[in-house]
Length: 154
Image (cartoon, rainbow, N blue to C red; front, side):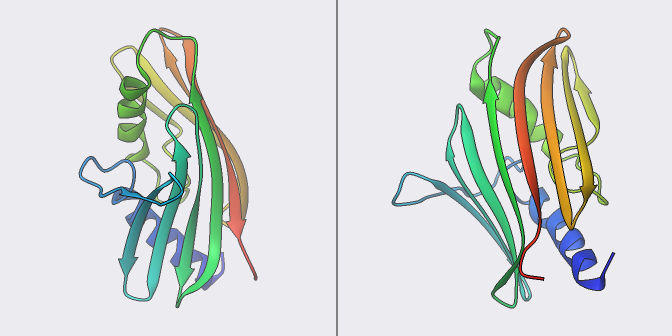
């Protein structure tokens, strides 16, 4: 892994822990109806811009010295459950805070709480990857999220 992408990985891990999964995160409302989460440290900046709630779609971008160098697009939805999307997303937020440092794209490979299970699988590395996350309740899938990303403008 190049020194640049290793820097992205370390910064992204920190930014994600201050992002959507964090219950105290400040989510700004954009003029076009979107939602924005920003995180800045030194010469690094992270911007998560997303639309909707159920379903939702968005993009995360990591900037270094004001230049975009890494991005990830994602989309997710709740289905096949009587739980509210707020309940499902509250569990998802907990899982997102458990992302592994080496692969901080979304959450961990697995996170379990009561009768809910979060599973995440991906192929690739920080430079170029694709993944899928699901949430199961009593072994029935109730949420699916898809994502992909990597470096931009090498």
